[in-house]
Each structure stands twice: as structure tokens, then as C-alpha cells.
Image (cartoon, rainbow, N blue to C red; front, side):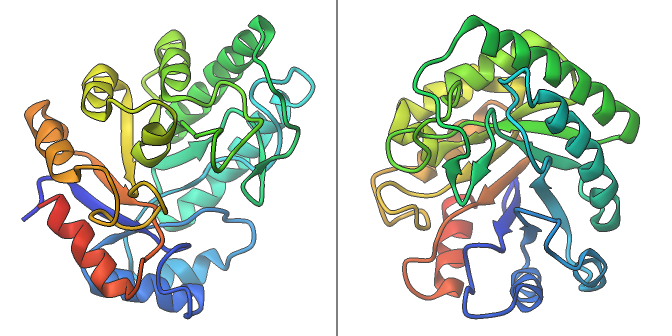
Length: 257
């Protein structure tokens, strides 16, 4: 039995099925469920599946790092809280800049001091929204080499600095180890350094972004390190299935059990 809550992104497995059937299948296999966008889904129908939902996107538009649109992130974070109530989701995901089909909506090639300050102030406001509603907002690190070029303050060391700088109990990290391996490496040292700042761990192997065991990351060693540091939270599989989706979920469970 795993010492972590294991969750699976319904966006990336059983992709031949409609979203409701994916959710049911993931739930039947004994995993919690994660979704990305919520505005284009029937939330009541998702809730009626009886599945446990652990996270979803926590904003719709805007860049945390941009004074011209940070207010829009905060405004749509509030809308996301209301949507989350329907699914019982208590963890909402943020990025430092808006993504459109995985790409930076407004690419930027360098970070500035103003970006740091703007993001920190917006996260302080979002943390207060989260505290009032009993939800935690998690800032996800991204890689800018393969998947998300043009997103500033995207590396794990940057998202950690933001979360620790804000210092709000309702603002944590969505520590994505797939992205961190591409951009930074030293994953066991990274999880130890992030410690209490972690709101959730997300995983996929490198290269290919498929389930553990298909690439270069030693996820069994990472699982042992997480147990040793006392982490008992959610580990989410945000990965494509390299072949059969059930086999991919079984490999994920094996790596973290």
C-alpha cells in the first residue's frame, strides 16, 4: 500500500474515451483524479461519478508576473474557487504566466524585478482568497527547454523562491519532477530543499513524458526520499501512457508503493 495519495491526470490517459468515462476508469482502478481546465467541463456530471478530485487549474487568464493582467489572475482564481466547490477540490494550480495550448500566451525571454514583485503581490492576494475558502493554490514549475518556452520564473528554484517569499500557508508549490528534471535535475536534493513548501508532487518520466519506468528518472529512489522526509501528500501522474493506459497506471503505482 502506498504511503502517498496517488492521483492521475484524466487529460493524459484513456484518451480514446470521453472525459467522464476516463474519470470513472481512473476511479475504478483506485486512484484519485485530476483535471486541467474546468470552464469547458460539466462539473456536476464529473461530481456525480463519485470520484475523488485532488486538483484542477486555479485561474483562467492573465500572467502573475504582469501588472497589466495580474488582477485578471486573481479575479479568475476567485471563479476557480467557486468551481472547485462542486468537485470538492482543495488544491488549485497556477502558472507564473498564462498558457494557451501549452505555450506562453505572451512569451518573454528574461525576468525582471518587477515580475518578481508583481507575482509575489498577486500570490499574497490569492493566498487570502484560498484561506477564506479553505483551498490551497499551488504554483507549478515548468520547463522552458522542451514544453513551455517563454514562461518567466518557471523553474523550480524560482517557484520555490516565490512561495517562500510570500510565506502564506495557502500558497504552495506544485512540484513537477518531469519539468524539474529537464530544467534543473538533482531531483532528490530538490524535493528535500522544497520540503514544507510542497503542496503536491507531479511526475512523468524523461524523455517522452510517459509513466515512471519509461525514461531516466529513478522514481523508486525519489519515493524513498519523500517517505524519509515525511511527505504523505498527493503524488499525481501527469503523464502520457506509453502504451496501454492500465499498464501505465500500474507502473505508476509500483514506483510509489
